[in-house]
Length: 194
Image (tube, rainbow, N blue to C red; front, side, top):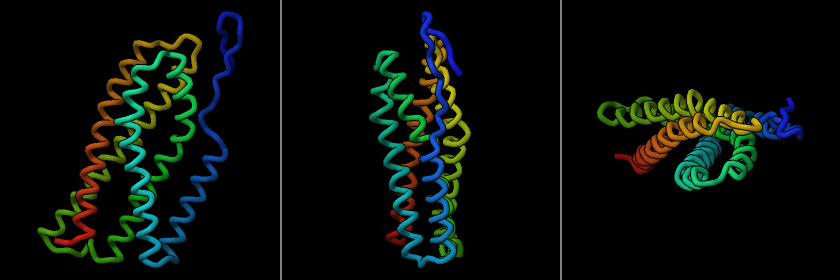
């Protein structure tokens, strides 16, 4: 799709890049192989590696990139978001899916789903936190990223609406950061025991 900027065409590009789709499919296939044929060590490695990446990227985006983006002029913000959204569009959902799924199977294999109360409350806490992170990520952050991406691709974006979306977006990202820290606390409890 092409839009005009003072007579010059501006190309609005799709955020979907074939390489990122392929990388996501390969990562999901590796998770399935780890679940079906891997040892607990391999499954734990997949879970910890993807969880660490998901948490680290979430915290970095929320507390480093976010504040920087708010202060950038329109053209710089447009350039950063145009480069960032295609990279995170499949990366973040893939990391969250792999982390949660491998964590579930790992918990099942290692007996965490069979714990008695009050220890089982830690399992409940992890499930609630992952559910909140998933709903926020897939239900709000992903669509908001796409809305902002496409709005900033326009020759004359509505900066008031982008600013309003960004305020809510940064609040949700801050909440995600808090949830990521909470899940680290729960995982540390699982790793060390009662």
